[in-house]
Length: 324
Length: 278
Image (cartoon, rainbow over all chains, first blue to last red; front, side, top):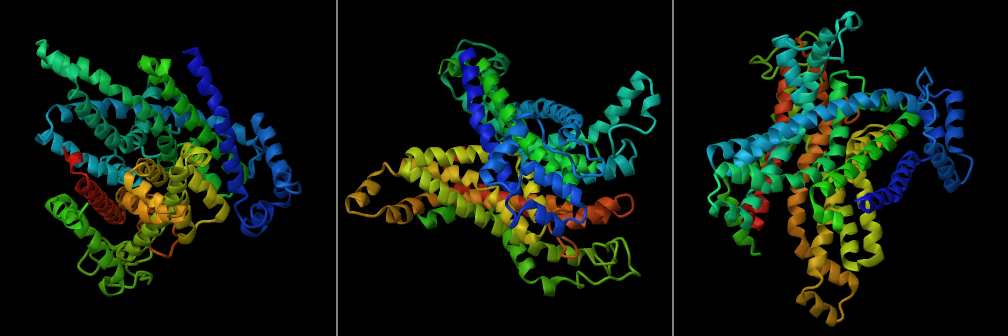
């Protein structure tokens, strides 16, 4: 297991280099240097901001030297300073928000798993039943539903029409004066709609995938054996089939990380949640290049870590991978 | 596979056929927008601001008194254009990369597939937003950016097809007859790999339409006054407490359009390979 883990960690190094290279190329995509571009396109870029950008990239030097310099800074988590009036280091800005984004995505992942797995299993146990057809319809709806529109509908219904749930921010204004339980309640109320929206996108794919896996596993010989032994159908389905059908889900979880992190741009912006996604959106709106690049690199690194976790999880669950 | 057989199977699939009908209907709406729209989508009428649906304005009016139905009808042009151009770009790049990797194998394959892995590491929206920050939002940039960030699936698909096809007898026969690499790829391998690409592209149009509407909604896509379903919804969000029609109708347009491409794509997939239907 240790060897496997080391191998995976070593594999991450070239990937990290590649991620930084692509990110570096993105900022040099525009005709002309980023600094010239800003003077024409961004009134917010003061002379001083230009100077800082030049320092960050060393724009008078050859391209490979620029990349090398930038990489050295990145390795010390120095993403430069934001162009916004507060001029704080990019890393500080991201650091204080990353927890919120990861936390919300973690909650929505729990909902996805908690809902999609039972849905998929039930649909597969009675294929082509009304329940199966109903979930298939839901899946098609889920694939076609724009998450930001779902957010608008939920805001309209639960926030405006029923007035049950708050529709923006993470906490109420007088949060500081609340008792502990009031704080928990307040947070939960604020978080409900965003988490539901974030979860919805993953639900369709996951339940479809789960159904497919179950149908695949149920055809295997060991299921026939289990049934032939006279085990009750419940044991066969939930113990023998479900466990094996669950394993590929670990991989899918890893693959869904970029989608979840990307989706946070949308739900955080709509619900005014101070996370990484909203920060990214405002950085793009303000053309705050150091912040945009910092977010891009961090987002990709998070994806890489998610994939690593999924691979390790799979290896823990399936001894064949560890040996291979 | 025979074309007639494919059509016969597709025709039996009612969901796919209704998807196809909706897709064709959307084409008609986009093409005939100037005739179908009851009003000019960009003309203000400040006496008719934020009017709820009525016989005069079937889907109501927006903050500047523009007719929402007309704006949705004209918005279908944006969606179609972005969907098709973006998927065209993605398919072109994907087919090119996939063919090269699958045909030549070895180092070429290694390098190209690592590039695919790398691109997949980025949350797509992050990559798109970063490029928009550099290039600025406009409908043309959006199409190119969506295309440039969504070719990886096609590349993998084409590569996999090529890997299995290149070992087949008809390829060996063509090679023995002295066919060049280019001829082998374009005449013998590609045509046989295109059916799965077609499925992928159909589903890709749906994805591109969703992405465009999300970007326009965030103010980073198609810029007003050009109507797009996404940017009408932005106004919907800003007036959510007073004008439900601004939020509901454009969203329904996106939902139905995306769903019809998905149904059609799934239908084509099943018609190509009926075993999937089991």
